[in-house]
Image (cartoon, rainbow, N blue to C red; front, side, top):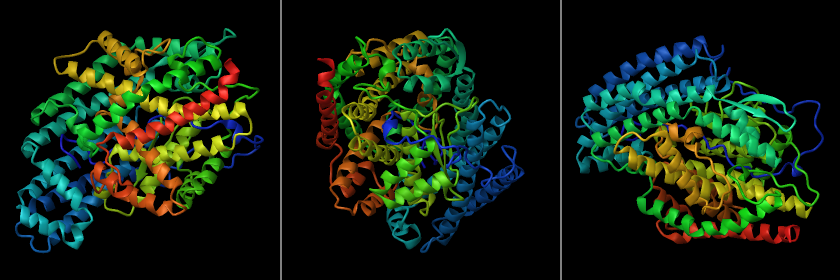
Amino acid sequence: MSNFNTIPHLTQRAFVHQDWYNSGNIVGKRRDFMKYKQNWNLENIFPGGYDSPQANARLKELNQDLGTLATELAALDLAKDVPAYHGLSDYLKHRETDINGLMELNVFWTAHQSADFNNTAIGPKLAQVSEAFSTFKDLEISFGKKLAEINDDDFKTLIALPDFKEIAFNLTEDRKLAAEQLDEKSESIINKLAIDGFTGWSTHYDTIASQISVPYTDDNGKTQTLSAGQALNQLTGAPDNNTRKNIMSAYEKAWGSQEAVVGDTLNHLAGFRLQNYKLHGTDDFLKHPLELNRMSRQTLRAMWNVVEANKGMFIPYMDRKAALLGKQTYDWQDQTAPIMVDGYESKAIDYDHAADFIVANFRKFSPKMADLAQTAFDNQWIEVEDRPGKQPGGYMEEIPERQESRIFLTYTGTPDDASSVAHEIGHAFHYSVVKDLPEMRRSYAMNVAETASTFAELVVADANVKSATSVGEKINLLDTKMNNPVAMFMNIRARYLFETNFYKERLNGQVTPERMDALMLAAQKWAFSNHLGTYHPHFWASKLHFYIDEVPFYNFPYTFGYLFSLGIYAKAQASGGNFEDQYIALLRDTANMSTEDLAKKHLGVDLTKPDFWQSGADLVKKDIDEFLKLSDDLVH
């Protein structure tokens, strides 16, 4: 839980990640049958499609039950509940039932909407869930106030009891945050206004994105109209320079044509957020993101200082990649472009083979992670079918009452898509090892959530590089592995710089689309050392992550997760075979302490110092050096 009216559960709408592996290692003969189905199973959550009678009945039941929960909370007198606090224990059990139910309904209808993005009948369902969440958040505020009223000695006694020891950190966190909240009536008003005044603007962005059309004419003169998601999918994996250039131009133009309405949306989202912060006594727009990620400003500064100090190592890499692509300059659309050199040709990745490759290489590090991946593929937890009408992007969501996960993305056979599968299964594995814990202990922050997903990518990326059978193939594999650090050190750095400067200016009033273009262009030039031939000024409009209401500054946790996972991966390689238990122990603690304490306990490192972050940058430098060495003869 947290203050500033945030829903306890943080939705992991995961970054559509840079590609990590090349199809040559995993593609065999095309099968005449599909081993794994490419559509997820939502019927075993609630049968009957998006208008499931059971889902509708469950929502009605939960709304009624929230009334009962409110009555129980009003009657809960912690001063009279001593010494065993049985009333508090009963309340928390009832609370868990309701929050799990709301989360499951939210995932169910979100999943249907993602798979059928133009179905306007699903939006009202999600709006009803938002209203129920608003009621639940009112109760969370009241509960926090009750915790804050307990004197320090009694609270220490409470959290030492067996019923509460497991969530002692979370209760302490909620008690502290309650002190920063307004009175219950004011907080309730903000919650209610947020449904249409905050969440509504976030949902509005989804509506805009679903209507974006990208007219594209290929080299043969054939014109087709792509959705935003389809254009992005084609752009990231296109091997032809002209194809990428033309799609990028059309994509930039399409978002530019909608800049007024998209800019209006971002201004209103940020305005609501900043006003909410101001009502809670601060104009520091980084305070809440840092609290949500349970990390200190010193840690964030140490990480970015190392990123900034090391960005120069990417310049030779960008120059070399441009040369291998037969270009004079490295452009924005080249970040994930495949390299085909020395007789090597990239092939489409068969989904079945990609799945089996992921499972096999997970097993080398963690049999439990491999088993979880196999379960996800076998039991239709994953929606990957490439078809019109799907939402762009990808994510993993937990199904708490069934203790399962669901994964969403669109699979077109590119390395980038295959990377996303491994990424999201990493999220699912994280949930699988905490699913038996109380809900509070499952509410891990986004920065550490991205650690498990990025670790999953590293496992497969290294497996691919090691199995290369030619110089050309190894160059390609190292390049696809490099897409991750380019994103984390430069692309996401640009997002953070843009968002920081945008919020600084938004404090003084609305920011025009033209100014947002300028801020984004300046951020990209700084982050990429002013070394790109072309940029993407309307990236602020096209990137979903800026428009998510639940998690402010959604971007920097990815860089944290990437570098943090490098440290964990190095530990795994040096573990001598007993890594799995250590890894699971770390993941189970991710919602049980601060990020700094987590790193100190499980890795023995200080995140506020540059040493740990620099060790990750040094590993990236080794890959760059090897890439340059292997490709040197091809350009000289």
